[in-house]
Image 1 (cartoon, helix red, strand yellow):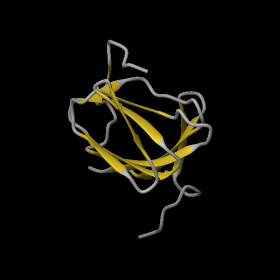
Image 2 (cartoon, one colour):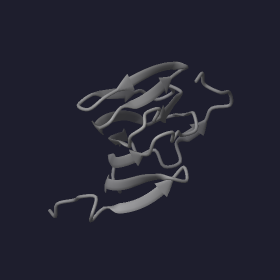
Image 3 (cartoon, one colour):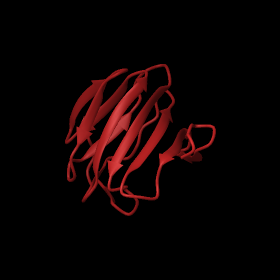
Amino acid sequence: MPTISKQTAEHYRWGGNCDGWHLVSGGPLSVIEERMPPGATETAHHHGVARQFFYVLIGHLAMELDGVEQVIGPGQGLEIPPGIRHRAHNATVADVTFLVCSVPPTKGDRIKATDKLAH
């Protein structure tokens, strides 16, 4: 099997200024490396089926889970079961780089939150 890296993985942009690299895709597991610049945020949402695990490589990632904020740093992770409303954002002055592992992949399983989460 060939090795995979950001240099060889499929790249995409999201949220206007964030980057993602599909390290593992096409099967029952999705592993994405993402980079969020300072001030970047995603829309609050949940997944009906997918279970996710966010793992920080560089920087500090703020995660809102059902309106409660937690900050995870390098070497720390957070599991998010299906049905839990969440939103990742970078409230720092430096980029944050993290892995998002999803089982099954979240394509077609993203449900936008209808109300705002606390800031």
